[in-house]
Length: 186
Image 1 (cartoon, rainbow, N blue to C red):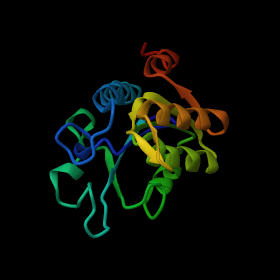
Image 2: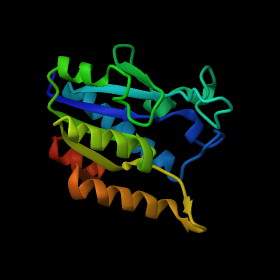
Image 3: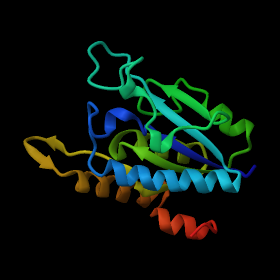
Image 4: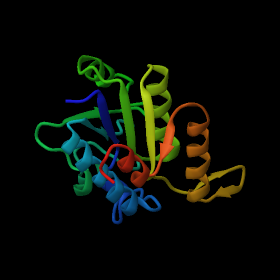
């Protein structure tokens, strides 16, 4: 066991083709996440899966008990890997995530998953606030187009903006290849 945890955030069926809220580039991002999950398992890093369930009435996606709310096959947990179910953007909020990390002596967290501008942003900033050395794998994260004030913001720009902000003050932001080379799995 190492002092590093890979936090796999919301790689769930509703974000993929045929789901209720498909993200741009989600398949490629999930493929990179799968590579990182495999490397983390080989290294003996803790792998923690986060799964969102929306409790709001008439939720557009991640409805409890649906196939869409289940982990996608590319990032499915092994029997001995913890799956934390969350109901908020920040996976530390009202879950046991921080307790688990503290109990296991985790000092570093690596973040992959969905969506760049929501849960990835939230977990990264919170991880830094709690004192973890935090790394985000940018090509193992995905998002979708946004709009504000009648301005359409393409997914690539949303993703780049959030990765730039996280890199500026909260985390190392690396590609899967860069990270795997650093940890000896290149």
